[in-house]
Length: 104
Image (cartoon, one colour):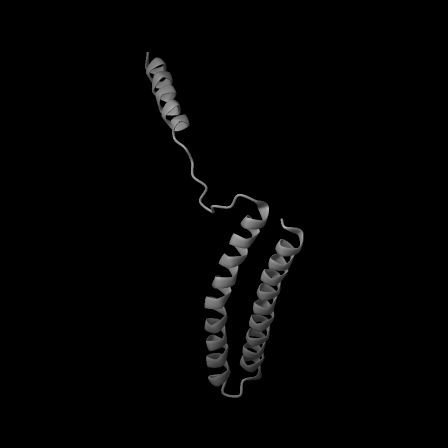
């Protein structure tokens, strides 16, 4: 008897689940729009994180007090932050260029 109630309940729940329409959270209709949305998110994330990493690297450099390991760590943070930001900007530019050229 309990299994019958469980099956009826399961069927009722599933009928309500199919009645609802799921919206597209990214609002992208094509693959290019999806790439553009993802790249915009990554770009603005990089715009926020890159200056914070540069400030952290500067703080590490200032507080190194002559310790060569901390100076090397600060230099690597600065280098990798700049390289990462350049890669994000280049990727955004490449996607924009390809989207215009091929009308994807």
